[in-house]
Length: 450
Image 1 (cartoon, rainbow, N blue to C red):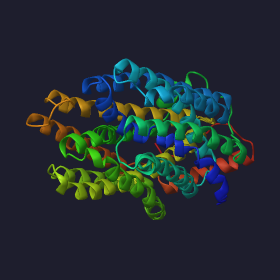
Image 2: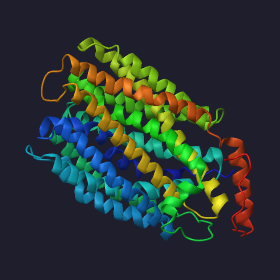
Image 3: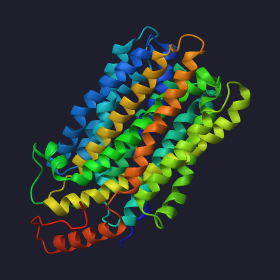
Image 4: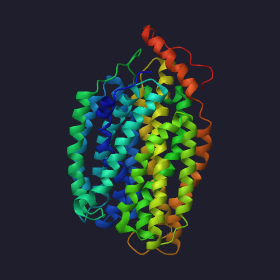
C-alpha cells in the first residue's frame, strides 16, 4: 500500500472546511434564523425544503455526469465557487420582510454551487487511492477539515461578537469568512493536488444517469440503507435548534450545545479510523445507528429549564461522536463501490455515483427534515407562540420517534452489506493488474458480490 503524503491530503481536504461551514451548520441554523428574523413560517420552511430537494434531483446527477463525461474535476469546482459567491450574501442577509420566495431562490443558487464543488471533490477523493484502508484515511482528512469548518461556524458568534446567538450580524461575518476561504482553498488544491489518472473504456453517456442504478444492485442496496439513515439524521438536523430553543428553552446556548457536538465529531475521527482497521466498515455503520438512537431516547427524557442544559450538551456531543463515525464510513464504502462498478463496466463513473449519494443525502435531509417539521406543525407548533400541549408531543415525535423508527431497519441492512474488506481487496488487485496491462475490456465481477 502506498500512503499519500500528508501535505497532499491537507491541500485536498482544506476545501471541505468552507464547504462544511456553508451547508451542514447552515441547514441546522438557517431554519431557526429565518423563523426569528424574517416573515418565513414553519410551514413555509417545510415547503421550501421540499422544493429545493426536487431541484437537487435534477442537478446532482447532471453535474456528476458532466464531471465524469469531461474527465475533469477541478474546473467544475471553480464554477461552483463562483456560483456560491453570487448567492451567499443574499441568503445570509435577508430583510425582515423576506418570505419563502427569497429563502428558496437564493438557497437554490447556493445549493447548486455547493453541488458543483462537492460532487467532483468527493469523486476526486475516491480516485486518490484504491486501497481499502487508505481510502478511510483520505476520508478522515476530508471529514476532519469539514468538522473544523463546522466548529468555526458555531464558534464565530462567540469569538467575534462575544455572544452565542446566530443574529443577522453573525451571519454577515460568516458570509465574509466563507466567501474568502472558498477561493483561497480551491487555489491550494489546484496547485497542490494533481487530478488522478482514470482508466476507462469510454466516457459515460446520458443513459448512464439511470443505467448505473439498473446495472448495480449493490448501489441500490447502499442507497436504500443511506435513505433510511439520511431521513433520520435530516429530521434531527432540522429540529435540533428548534427543539433546544422552543421546547427546552436554551435559545441563548445553541452554540454551547452545538460546538461540543461538532468537536466530538472531529476528535472522534482518529478513534474511529483505529476501529475501522479492526471492524468492517458496514458493521461500524450499524454501531453508529445504535449510538444515535441511544442519544435521542435519552434526550427525550430531558425537561425544559436550566437543569437540562448540561445533559443536553453531553448527549448531543455523544450524538456528534456517532454521527462522525457514519461520515467516515459512507464515502469510503462508496469509493469501494466505484471499484466494483469499474470492474463490471470498465467505465469511470465515480462522480455519477457520488452524485447519487449527494442527491440521496440532500433529498433525505430535506424530506426527513420536512416531515419532522410537519409533525409538530400539524400538532399546533408554529414557532411564533409558546410551546405547550400537543405541540410538545409534536416536537418529540419529530425529533426523537421519527428518526428512531427509521434507524431500526437501516441497522439491519447495514449489518448485511455484502462488499467487505476481503471482496474489495480482490477487486482492487484485479483492477490493478488490468490497468497495468491496459486490458480495459469489462469482465465478470467476483461471484460472491451481488
